[in-house]
Length: 201
Image 1: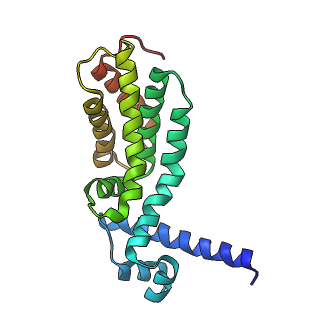
Image 2: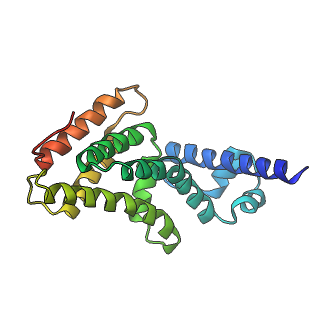
Image 3: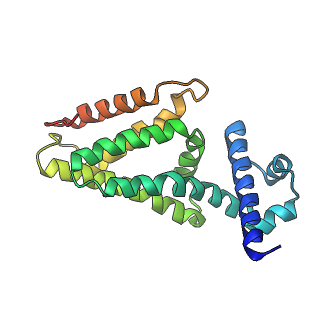
């Protein structure tokens, strides 16, 4: 087999293992064992370790798959928006939609917040960029007098992120609810909570 084909086949196998692990996370509601992963993916433990080296590497790959797919493009788009109010509105809507569209985030975000292992420093670093951008956006709006609140930007950002993250605990992923309606409701609550002086529709 040519090197290119071999690499593509290897990546395809790794992607399948990652997706199998995500399905198990959703089914069990917590991090799963390598035995369960191997059984579900129909592979041996040595094969699993051949592709990922360890369970830690596999879980890191699961986290990074979502970060590369959703978080990085989302942050890049937000950074391209010069107007801070439009940026805030985009961030609240887009992140809420992402959370509603990916039930695995209920486990992965909680895992990121609670895991103290330095091994996941890269994962935490990527999510911290999200917090920093939101905090700075709120701070910019406050300095321009668009947000009329005395709440510290750092606290405000944490409150906003907490509200959006909590969606993972009550949103019914089995029902095809109106994600746009939920995203708009989240935005309305954020704008009201921050006491935005001037709104852009």
